[in-house]
Length: 216
Image (cartoon, rainbow, N blue to C red):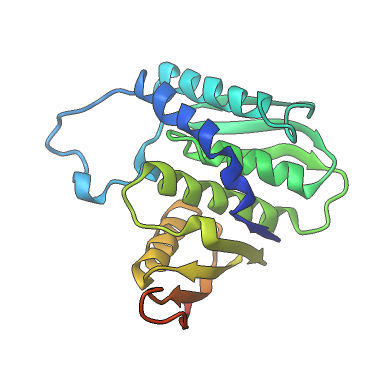
């Protein structure tokens, strides 16, 4: 199942609701045993209280309501300890993918449960489509709200039998390494990550691009 991140970024303005709404309810800690701030990403923030779940619910409701693609769908969802659970029947993989991606891109969401989500006209293995959509949402979230350097807008994600393939253009190799780290740590169903990206050369010196290939 292949989905590109470019179209999803059209929702970037709405994703700002995530940080605004969640920040108003999220708890803070001064415990010295907390994770070092230098290693924390937007994907490390997980809702753990009813108030935080309510913030996610409000954000996701607004995102769905304001989407021409999603607003008419007969789908319900609940949020419990950061897990978004969808229930309903959809017509296409693209509808399911966008729902999953939208939920995953919200700060505080730890997972999206699709066990009660059905697609009547699925063209791809459902598990691969879910994996692809989750990864897209995670990368968008980190790109918008996190501190890790990513190039999600120029990255395509494809999943076949649990193996994730990343293609696109990056500014440096660290961007793709960051993406691989997020995928491996956040999506347990992924068997392997394979990337084939081009590293853009500085436009002031050369328009050529360097190929970067790796299996991880």
